[in-house]
Length: 162
Image 1 (cartoon, rainbow, N blue to C red):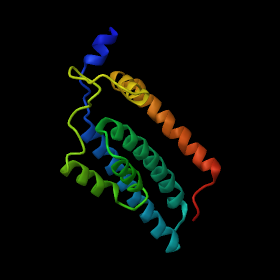
Image 2: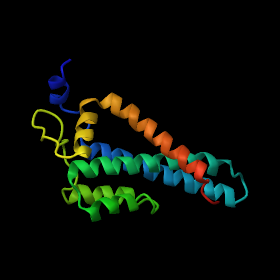
Image 3: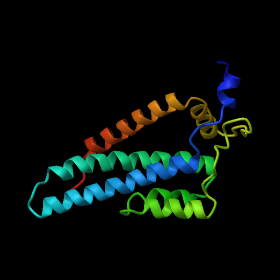
């Protein structure tokens, strides 16, 4: 496959669907963590907080990276991009933020740096995004490695209090 063929292919998942899926996963893991906390503070068991806390941490890191990736594609303002990241800190806020972004036209049905009508990347970040969009399986693998590395680094810095 030539470089031209790889970059001309339309990605199967749109920014809208990608962002919505990761925002939903982050909300679900918030719910699991809160359920674990109910079990812990009711004296049943505290093991669920450890398990669900790790799962939620991984989902939150993945959501943050996804927000940045979509932020670049959508050319969000600093305020919108920062709000997307802050939404991960507030329980269940990623889904309302995603719905708001969808309703206000801030989530596209296509990646602007991929496919037949792709724009030419202008910055280093856009070139990196175009490269990732042309190689989705490699990018997914790199994304998983990035989430793992960030999660491990955060855990080594100190586990969350609780």
